Image (tube, rainbow, N blue to C red):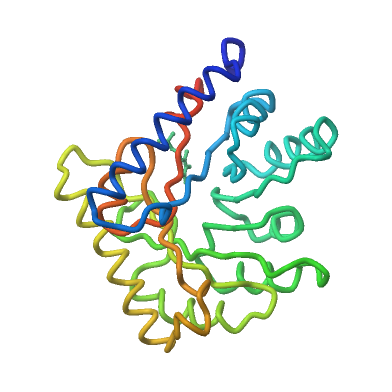
Length: 247
Ligand SMILES: *Cc1c(COP(=O)(O)O)cnc(C)c1O
């Protein structure tokens, strides 16, 4: 982990740059200011870096590796019991590791099959608020990626929407990187259109249920502006905030 040169000032500069980029893309798309949330992806960076970012006001953090995330949560709680962070799990979920995810996170972005959803629902503590869930969709049919197919999404969304300890917040995708901006944007467009289709199929009434299917988790360091142009409501940013990961 390359934490040494990372100070609160480094964090502040990076955070302001990313927030400015989000604001600019939001304006250019003619969207409402503040309609895109920043998720700081702190995987492979140590707790002090994460805390520097938190001290600049960032509250939502995304982690990919369960063991690493759980250890960081313990350290953060020990060092800063006052600090209320929002933890998002954005890594692959193994079905035998759902319990710690259900118990220790506020959001999960990577639900891609009913078995996982059902286990998370059963294992979410009864006294906790429902776990916020995004369904991960393999939107560009890439071979290496996890995520359900677009065709599987309606049935999975319906199942998740009926699980009382889960809250179906939206869809998430990690399109294959492409130098061709049109190709990259097409994947984001497809995710947005799928979300519109699901809302119609589930009969979502946005007035009655403002937080049901309200989220499009898409956009990373290299493509955040395009994702926002296509309707992203949550960008997941690692490199632009914390620097290059060493592994
Ligand atoms: C690592 C990761 C990110 C952040 O990627 P950057 O390119 O470093 O911004 C976002 N989402 C997921 C699912 C990731 O694994």
